[in-house]
Image 1: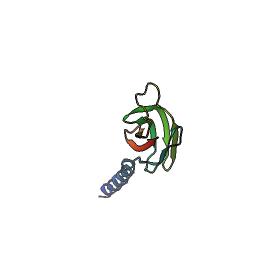
Image 2 (image 1 turned 30 degrees about the horizontal axis):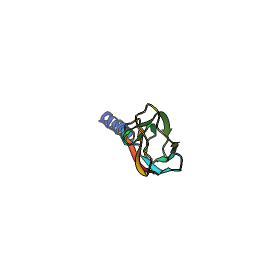
Image 3 (image 1 turned 120 degrees about the horizontal axis):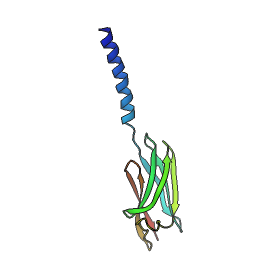
Image 4 (image 1 turned 30 degrees about the vertical axis):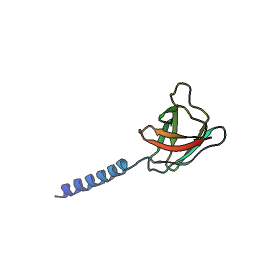
Length: 119
């Protein structure tokens, strides 16, 4: 009986450890996104309980900036500025008073969109 109790306690501690691992999540909140006159500026914060890695920026639904490997720690911030998409990426910024959808993409497959008006 004592062995069964010890095993049950060990399993309970093991299961408690698994709960912590599987309940972590990334959550990127874009705190600012604007056109500063020459480029799009994006500032974001990781408010989740797991680090996040931003690997791409989309513009209007298509890849704009690729090959990024910016790790954002828990509570950390990410900022970037760009005036045009990479030549072969596929996306583009539309000027002339048009609202562009810019999205941060992470290695976990999540996208975090924001609208930026470019005059």
